[in-house]
Image (cartoon, rainbow, N blue to C red; front, side):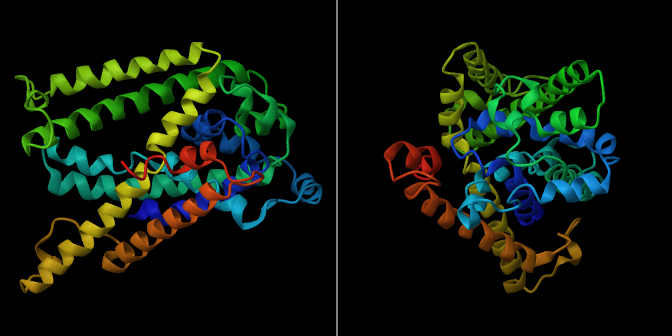
Length: 323
């Protein structure tokens, strides 16, 4: 729920570098989000005078108006996906009453520090119309705005550092994805909403069938060797791009209904091991934001930025809604 509220901040600062290329490959715009935080400190030293001078050279932060901001909503939500895994991990925690509240609070502050603050710095340091943002390959580290900021600061040794960061980030994302999807499949099988075979748990508590299936689907990563890898990634993102919107909308709605059930039964939150910092009103605000994003995304899907209405753009933006 905190993520759904903070996503608006991520959208606003992300617009500075993304608005100018609505048709740029989504892969080159999304991959770097997990590694941005490691580079915020070295670039802060760039002179304020340079920043002020550069601001006057382009039409940032909203060069394409409101629609330009709306077009990056899904990308921002995509970058936040996975923060809800701390709740899923509670089922395998030795003492969830003590570790879960601590983990949830850490997630909130890490998002604030690693995403919002760092993206604000990048929005100030890198113009949205920098040619290196638009011409670099989606598999080239030079496409990252953090790389551009560091190059502007004259820091050497960047390629090796960036390769290491990419490798660590990819391993981290892959590990959490395998964990989350395999446990979700096991839970669905236990509630008769998925084939029973996915409910198989070995002696060490691992849902092996779900893990094997997930790792098999992960072989799609070899599509990167194809010249059509950008197009394939766009359609894969179209299938899952709005999933985090539905996920967090559902989480907020479940919290609202849960708190309503407590009230009807004459109980309160004093018996709960953990309560949200923003409470029921934060859940209502988060649900409202997610609904608004879905509606605005439909608008940009029907009338895409800089293009006439067409079926390809619509389904790339709204394909995951029927599912």
